[in-house]
Length: 76
Image (cartoon, rainbow, N blue to C red; front, side, top):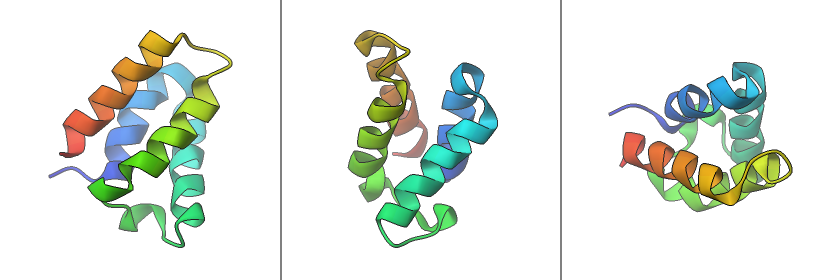
């Protein structure tokens, strides 16, 4: 099963760039006291909140919802 970090970077990378996508994942991990490689599917709600905060100013809600669904589908 692919890890949350790689799936998120793969999904968000085309929209915001791989570096920004990876920074979003690392920020999520830090907020949970983990490393990006230690994130698990149960950390998705925190990641989702960070993705929404990151993309809210630049993407419509429907696009963000679709990206979140793609991340969830890639790891669950």
